[in-house]
Length: 90
Image (cartoon, rainbow, N blue to C red; front, side):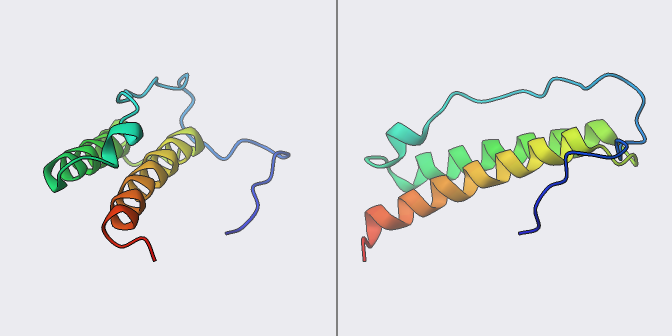
């Protein structure tokens, strides 16, 4: 992954204030003992939120929205990784 820069002009072309994005309750603690349907539901919800963020920005490039999408996708990855470790803890 490339390091983020914290200096320089903001790359967002959207001049509106950042939009708060919805979050889901943290479900990672229940994934370990759950059935595949629970894992699927958790990932589907996270991906739905990623899509909401994408739709809310339209055609603009918004670093805050991109960061939120990244966070949501990382959470979905963690849910899937945890589920796979429960199935095969190699």
